[in-house]
Image (tube, rainbow, N blue to C red; front, side):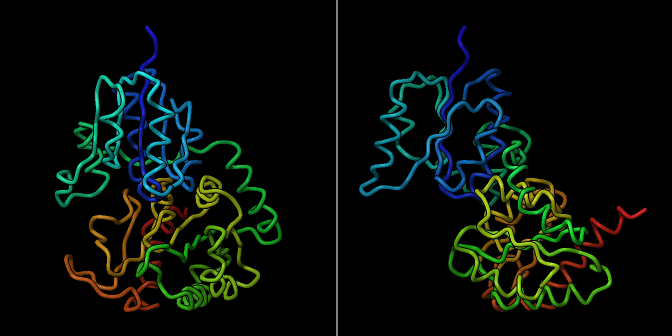
Length: 316
């Protein structure tokens, strides 16, 4: 009997791909030995290149008149799929020959966390924890940037991700610089290095924090693809970032993670896992305030609490 063939259509966004990454392990549980094809956007595509059972990653670049869906159909219609999973809820899954289909629809949005919603979609009684599938290439790319910068002054690393690409999610850039100054002045962060992480276009919002860090800074902004960035974050002892894909990456990698939230639903979209925290401009569930209302002092105190919870207990 040939191995089962599975098509997994996931998001064009990094965060949503991370949130649904537990589906990969669940496919293997339901269909042992499955050969998986993943279709996703270009930025998150590297997240799946080393995922277990994944033999192909199809990049979906958005085209006019939904041409990307037609292109995906042409690449997949020739196979007979044992299972098609489409968390984007497109019509594609109904147009392909498949023994079983799992297609997302908005009726699944019942006010539960996204990880839980995807888990229920897959029929799992327990949450499908997100996971980052590292490979040697990503580890090496991260080391090539970080190790030379650590050589002169090694120390623990706090990673900062000061960008979110959706309007209203980015804490002001100058406050990241203020936060770094406050951390530098606190004895608990003596000897720590400050690593800025982001994509190729994220240099402007990272600039104030890098300037404040000075020689203690490590620049990993635009230094690699998302899996290399994930490998860099995995080197950190703490992570602080806006509500973004990198925040979800840090949580999935098991790093102690603090997510900053403004006018979005932190109770639904906060980082997933036991080593995560959120801080919001309005911390009353169901109420919102602009992210600019989140003060530097408030974030600094949340970072200290993260340090107390996950760094101080590790000391001998």
